[in-house]
Image 1 (cartoon, rainbow, N blue to C red):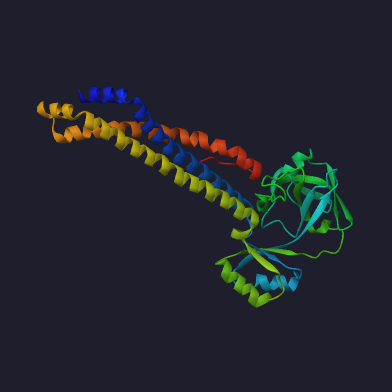
Image 2 (cartoon, one colour):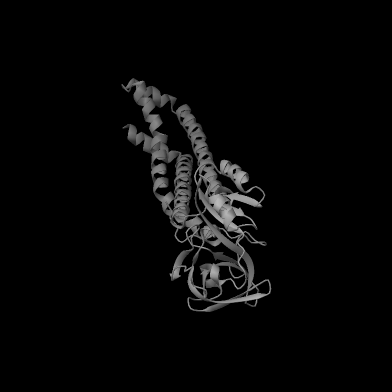
Length: 342
């Protein structure tokens, strides 16, 4: 009897109850969808950083001789270090793209993530390992030759592999937040491939403990022999991606609250109106033997079942649809070898 009355009342006020259902659905839909999206993306980037051993910090200096490196390695917090010469070059193409060259001493920290070709060989003087997104934009393949101009020098190498760098999940652009990979790229080469005397300018380090404490230790052992230290959290690529995830998390926290509040207010208004119009019916229900508790649960069930149905539908559809909507825009700006969506 009460269930039939509830169905009849919902039909008579279908627009209000439809709004309640939709608000509950949208609230859970956004919460579950965005929650699954940023959780999946966060897991994807962390797995990538772990697989490539992203550096804990970068020491920039023009005095990275063996003595300086030994002092850094002798710090108790240092677990590993690796020098690189990182310089800007211009690719030999019509649009003169900017290509950042990494001449690596090893390939153990912030390792080049190979997608196609053979692994980085630090004894290979003739090979280059190229940013895959840049290579795709330039229609380059493994086995092709590519030339770079650096300070009046021309470096011509064979592409031995294509892949990604964990330091370039986000590649900055001077003109747009979305990188034009036809104009910007990076490449990894053996230190033996540099055509002049090698002078490293970056020391990648892995260390234990607090970064601020590590900087204090650096100051004590190498003093003015370095120009700056960048910890992992402050690296431009890392911080930009983390800020993006924080923004998504904020959206996932705020928007559901708005929808739920609207649903609650609509529900309270609607139920107050129904109860005011049904005072006579409530009296009749009491007269035929229904207890106050039963009547109260009857009216509470109006919103409960609608909110429950909307929440379940949102919980199912949110993770299935929203992450995919974000994926394309994220892939346009950021570079990961794989994307998990929850």
